[in-house]
Length: 440
Image 1 (cartoon, one colour):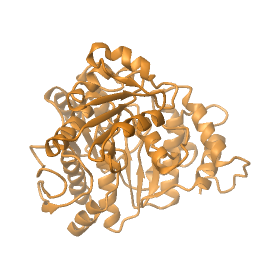
Image 2: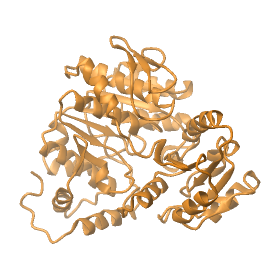
Image 3: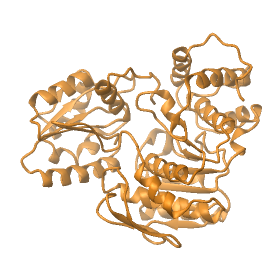
Image 4: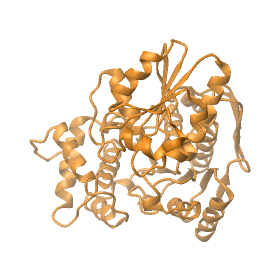
C-alpha cells in the first residue's frame, strides 16, 4: 500500500495545509503530470473498473446515487467527488466512509516522494492520485469518479471507464473552458472514450451537436435523456424510470427537488449500461440504494423553525433549478417569507445568477465565504446595482445567518446559496464543526 514504508512527522492538519498551499499556484490544464505521477506509483487507476461522470451541474448527485446503488448491490465502491463542504476527506470515500486521516498523511507524503524531483502536481492532481491509490489499496470492485472541472484536461481523465456520463452543459468556469456553450461542450466531451457508451442528460441542441460529433469520431454509443431513457414523476418521492431494458416504477429517493429526476435518470442509465458490461446489480439493489442516498449541500434542509436549506448552486443554470424549488415552496406556503443568503466567487456572474431568484425572495443578504477568491458582500452589492437596491451586506456567513434568523418567523425559509464554500461554512456553523481549509 502506498505510504506503508513512509515515516513522517506530518499531522493531518499540516498535510491539508500543504495541499492548500498547492492551491495557491492555480489550475494547470493538462494530463502529462498526473500521468507521470500515476505511472511512478504503478497506475492504480487501472486495477478496477470505473464510471466517469462529468457535466456543469448534477454530476455530484448522479455520482452519489450511482455509488449508493452499487453499494446496495454488495459491491465495494470507491467514490471521488469535489469540492468538499467541511472536511477534505469527504472527497474520497469507500462504501460511504471517508478516507482515514492517517491514510491521507501517508499517501500525500508518498506522492510527494514519487513526484520529486521533477514533477510539480497541483492540488487536484495530488488529490486525484491519492483517491486512485486508496481505491486500489481498498480493492474496490468499482469506482465512481466525478470530473473536477471541464473534462478534456481534468486530472480524472486518465481513466478508461466502463461508461461515461455528461449530465448538463452550461456556462461556468469560462476563464478555463471558454465563453460559449459550444466551447464548454467541447471540453466536457473530452471525457468520451473510443467505444465507451456515453449517457447524456438534459443538454441543449448546440451542445449536443458538439458532443455527438466527438462520440461519432471515436465510435462511442450515445444514450440521450428523453430519447433513450427518462424518469417520470413530480419528485423523487415516487417516480418511475424507463430505459431501453430497465423499467422501474414507484422508486423513492430522499433527495429534494424536481431537478433530481434528471440526475436519477442519468444514474440508472449508467447502471443499465454497466450491467451490459457484466456488472451485477439486481433490481432490488436499485430500490434499496436509492432509498439510502445522502448528498449534502444540494437543496438540503439543515434546520427547522425557521427552515434553513442550503444549495451549492453557483451558476445561472443551477440558479434556475433552485428557483423552481423555491417557487414550489412558496406556492405551498403563500404566507411565508423567504430570505436569501448569497455569497459567490469573484469569477461568477451575480446578476445572471440572481435573476430567477430575486422575484422569489423577500430579503437578500450578501456575504463572503472565507476564501481569498470570494467576493465581499459589498462587491456583490455594487455588481448588482439597481437589480437589488434593498440588499443588505453581512460581513461573515455567521453574521448573515444571525440577521436572517432574527427577522424570520418559524414558518419562514432561509435559503443559503451561491457557492458550495458558503454552504460548507453554514453547515459547519450549525454543526459546531471546524472547517478544513482546502475547499476549492
